[in-house]
Image 1 (cartoon, rainbow, N blue to C red):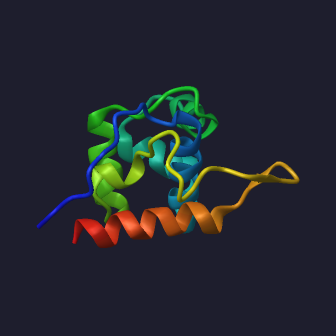
Image 2: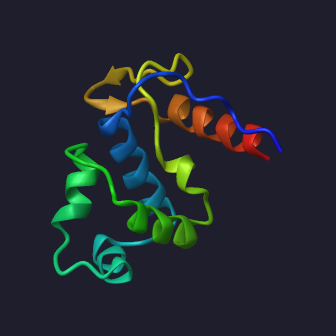
Image 3: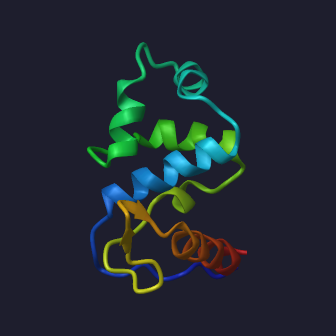
Length: 110
């Protein structure tokens, strides 16, 4: 099984946070439910992820991957990836490009 080659670049914390938010929402989980599953005493870390202020710990990514049925790497996006560079339209990201990127990464991993 061949995994996609990562570029020499850093993580895009903002886009990663937006992706995590969308995946959690589409799976039907509330912030409160995620907070309890992760054993967090308050929801602020989750909101910080959503805003791109920081990333989940490896432990939290592991739990999220189990909750959402994805690999941990599927949550993390690189900067400057040509397939999904965020465009803004009325302050909303064009999610179809982001989701196309994620689907391609998942397909390449399989």
